[in-house]
Image (cartoon, rainbow, N blue to C red):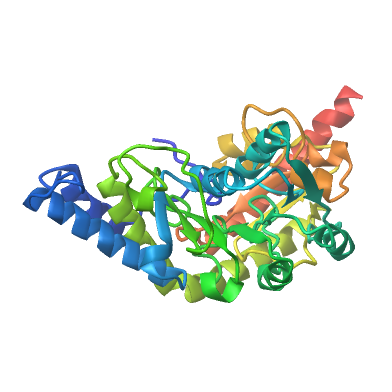
Length: 382
């Protein structure tokens, strides 16, 4: 079977063997409902409690601060809409480069009477400090700024921003989905009131995530029912996925430093080779995730190039849209001031645990060849 080298780890990751092993009993003979009072239920509850402890330990939080959800999108919605439901409509500030699962609930709040401001970023994708200070003077009630951008990999100084937000008595949230497992993520050190993490980005199963929440923050649940997860996320728990998430967090925390150094070296090698072809690498001057490279070639459509690379044996992502159904250029690049024509040419490579030095060398060679072929075709068409 044809299996391209996988270079799209920011989209999702391979389920770790240790995670699969931990989940298997909960897909078979261990099937209790964690709300049941009998032994089957007690075993399920104990498994969830253990997973909660593992997740909390991986991010420097207390287990009681971990609220399990179905993934990062639900956790982001839970904070933004759940916090807003406990307040009078006010000012919500989000960065201009947030994932759609932050941007879309913000739009819903705007229709409900909230004022929404998008925080500008500079040409490297970092929060524009002048605009930040101007918005902060207006004392926003809710602020959400992602720790690491899913396309560019750019990191934001969340601890510094959160300290300033606390002085203004707002609630500060960060989407740390892409950061977990690639850099150190410490809820207490970041100083935020809420933080979103996800399982399937770190070798865990799809269908599990968490909102790490300061208990002083009042939230209205998105899903009402039996009162699971401190009443913040009702519904019978997905024990297998939660168990897998816990093991994935434990593994990610243990391997983060070694992987950070290894992947950072591979990314730097990749970008050196790409630069030799005249490729523009976005946000290269900014502090970024060690595994992520976002780039474009003038005059070469990103979707077309990604398709050719896939057929040549490399699975990567186009930066021309935040979702496959969206034909618009990357809103991250647009916010960074990149012209639309170049933004439509963007390609993202994200490296992961299975990526090798040979993968990087072969990708760079194939990329250069495909770009040359597309340029030749374009010249003939003219």
